[in-house]
Length: 128
Image 1: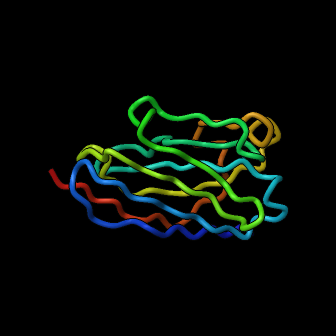
Image 2: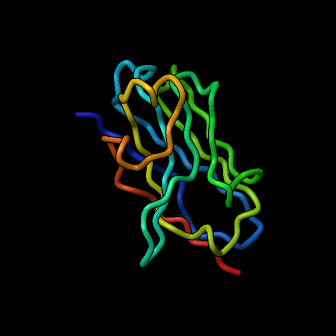
């Protein structure tokens, strides 16, 4: 069973930056695509950003493009999400997810149902 543990959430002011980390037991780590999702109260879980096995292919949801950067360190089995220019609408529980789906591993993917392993989530609160 793959375990993922997020950290780095917190409460910040609008316009601030925050970085999230996710350490995983996935092995080999390079056999997994990684992604960040978020879920705000009363809303469905949504894709934020994702990477293929080596981080060479990245994709982002439109609301976060230009503000968030997803990256991975394959030596540390860790994936990161650097968030800047945070807005109140970015407030949510942020989840790290892993996929061993072949196409996701090579090209990355955004569909929630293609990610089979999830962390417990970390809360991000943004006040205006």
